[in-house]
Image (cartoon, rainbow, N blue to C red; front, side):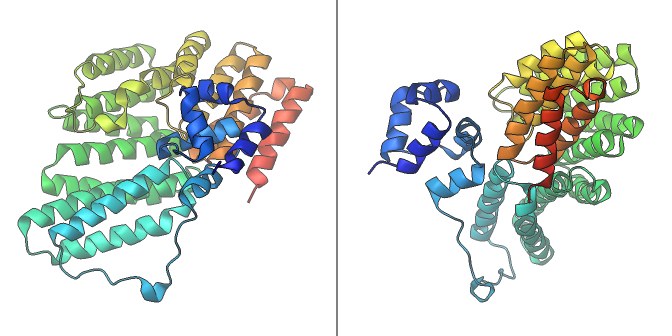
Length: 381
């Protein structure tokens, strides 16, 4: 049976099967299999497909996978008092599923589930009598605390800095207890993000990013390189151009050592170079260089759905810095398109900043149009 709703969405978006295939970089036969019900996209393709069809990711996910099951509270099994291998494996699978959904749905929808997972893990860690299982539970607890920090901060549009830092501090302490540089370094780096983008304390962010790089360097070039990229951004915020360039060069050299065995390869550090270099150049007022890097980043298929609006918002700001109204409006409209599909706290903040910087052109119709679109987005339930 053909999946007629998918066909209707495609036609409503004004796309042929060939055009949709080209947008998603898949074969025409793949699109035809989806529409005939012989196959379905992998979940990681949902954000791009939703953008192409101009619908919400949640609607697409519900179409292919069905609505999430609801369970009465009386039916929820009580967590086991003692950890065993099966329990740990089940919890890790649940954590991975929650982490995947972070890029697919608004963070506010995941807070309760993440909080429940973290509380469960703390209980098991306190009651486990096996040293091996205790280590496994604690490591998963740290990863879940980091995810909770991300969820809280994103859901608050990067306002709940203190709450996010509390979760990251928990993870860092667990990493130190386990003598696990990857966990500790990741938690320190996440804390650096809060200082750089939340409190805008570049000195504190720089210290944390440098600490994360030093902790991670012996075991993970990916994590160390990503931390150095953010150290460069902190230098840029402090208007320290030479130090910024030096940190970026150090980061690129470090990332050349990344391979598939790197424990933090899933952070996609190598794919972040152009995005963060662009952000650095923007802070330093090098608008042309920022535009080049950010255009490269915006065209990358590896940029996550919640990061793309940040890239596009910064790209708009780089265009504004060069007096390019058309380019700025185009980038902002693309960012708003993405935010309508999947809300991103960081993306909202950058786009709001970009729209404010359009003030010199405030009487232009296209500027008024993007202001209206942003207002509608912010006012949406």
